[in-house]
Length: 106
Image (cartoon, rainbow, N blue to C red; front, side):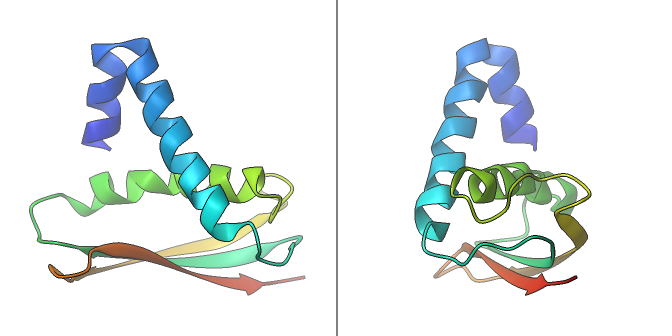
């Protein structure tokens, strides 16, 4: 989140470029997922170290949900499509990544 805020303060296009890049990356990785009407999400953030605060790390969920919308996996990222969201955090200095478990609900 700190990186997002800093980018938006530097220049209005810096945040726009960051958002576009990460949203498209999520869309690209999720384009073959089945379409879902509503789901709960468990997001596990594997960080290279513990230097960033957890609340700053999970600010990236905006890009995740926007990317899922762009890929057509979910229709929108509002209350009607997004159920509960759980965040988990772990350290993997060799392979930092984000893993998302999607549980479709009625």
